[in-house]
Image (cartoon, rainbow, N blue to C red):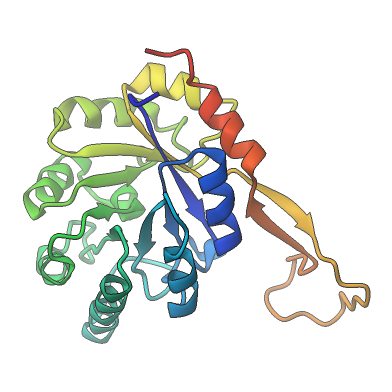
Length: 249
């Protein structure tokens, strides 16, 4: 199984623990999952860092939405990188685009300089790039270690053809990591059809709240969200997803 690497998109320390116990190699710790992932709190990073035998990568993203950042947002990202590095994370996850959908080289250079020798993953901002192959070369030149992508499709299985081409173009210069919609039922086909060796998935299940007094008429957030159900990564789903590739050499 050393041929493959498995990263869990963890929305909490609880999910980090499940990832570790399920056999994942690392986590990408995120808050704001409904927004596509935002920077987790100082406290969450600190507690996750105390877990043994787990590589901890942290997303640096100040808000949901697009990946076009102004100067104030970039300064926020710089400070978040500094905090994450002081805590001792093993990797950082970020990405910046121009208004035209190209890699924002100046913004990325600023963040990469702050990251120093801490490995960087360019996240799914890549899936909104105008030209994925030009972006691939620019991200390699910037010194990132991984690109997380769904192949510019709603899910990685749907974007398998572009993922395959990216793996071929990269020629081992950077790791192409398939993510979004990856699970125990499709990871094997994705591995076989693309040649990708790193996978990013959440392996989450719905958990009902233990609250005995419920008032579903009073919402703390958006309409249409069941606030008495949460989703967390489970050991079972992590293990089952990894096991789907066990006999591939």
